[in-house]
Length: 249
Length: 249
DNA sequence: TGGGTACGGCTTACGTCGTAAACCACAACG
DNA sequence: CGTTGTGGTTTACGACGTAAGCCGTACCCA
Image 1 (tube, chains in turn purple, green, yellow, blue):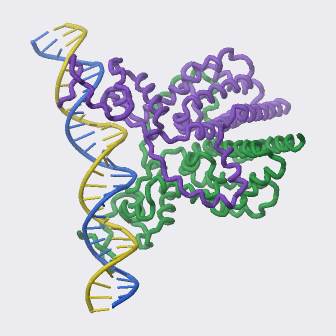
Image 2 (cartoon, chains in turn red, cyan, green, purple; image 1 turned 135 degrees about the vertical axis):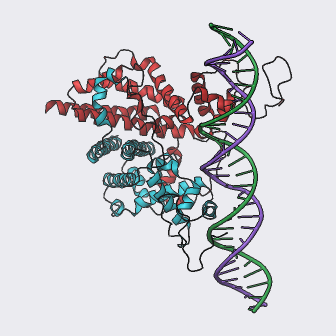
Image 3 (cartoon, chains in turn green, blue, brown, red; image 1 turned 120 degrees about the horizontal axis):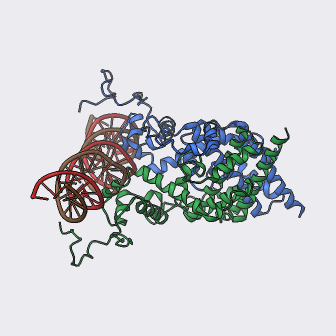
């Protein structure tokens, strides 16, 4: 009662009071893509644990259950967010352009594309990292990313055995996973505005570990791009060596 | 009513019917450690998302609220589980024995210790990986793990600058994080007996990517220990090179 | 012996979550 | 006109984390 709308004119500005959310452009007609985009925005702003169907609906100017006409469940919504992010890497023109520059160059561009995505959405990246087990940037459902083909077959054609290609792929994936998870964790600090700050008690014991406590500051500083670059290059060098060994034998 | 106990004798076996849980050794008097251990067991058996205060209580033969006398919140309980696991790495005699074998040897033993822990508790490892941002195996709260000191100061004393030591530490951490997360994800398959299996539809599109689909099987096979070993050794070699460069200059 | 007092666990209750189901307004179309 | 979608709301259910209060038992000191 007292909350109908879409007629024409009345005060209307009485409920609000919930948060900083805009009344939302509630006239754009709602769609799966809009929902996914809004979910990603929400995660970026408020952190993964703060995302709730009701809150997401509210941000879209709509009741929670309305979302279920476009998305079968929250779980699938999160999957869609992941796909959206990974799809965005493809849209990154730098990643794909000429697919024939050699696999090292390609892997390097892909890695940087994923890193850009991770840094652009630090709160959301743990989601994509924890989702479908095998790193998603090479799953076929990644629509029309033909370069995947280039990567794998490139390895195979250049002398990698199946096992070596898989191992190389895994080394690459786990490198990205580990490096970016750490980088993103400190970059995003993880606590969204909706979360309460916890105690933060107990700095005791640090006295016993002078070196550790001395480095404590540095430990939470930014991963630098050069750190990433160096590690990536070392990895690619290692893969190259492995490949050459396989070719020689 | 009709559910008093601790007197002496009566049938007593009437409630059950809930699941496969044993009636629980409900005479051991409950304690924080017992709760933490039970939580870990539960996660190992049923997966992280299945863990619930009520269910955990039930497994201990106790009502959910009883746990709150020993644990302030679920969040802190999970922290305690992580500490328990990491503490277990310390108890791994292989890891620590003689702290003076050189930092490469130490890092190698530590890495294998953590890997053993991760493989022993595949469903719980993502928890420890996602917890307090900076890898916890070097946090001082890890009670009496003096070798932490050895590691860091070892690096410093052998010519690493502060920044280089931090970078080395990060390379090491992110390597462990990434590698073990992948290894554990396939090893544990993540779906606990409590979860429903989801659709699994849509194998379409694979036809366009013959190489990928050919490797699809291999991709979900086990990470082998040798894969880990090789990557670890490559990493340590790289750190050694970095250190030597720093010494030379 | 008796009456605190503290502990350990139970019961109840609140607010929030994901979501099933029914309902409703309105447009398009026979 | 009635029918059938379509896009949204309302209501409701069960499960969650957990605050608050209630009790039975054990111990302690008079």
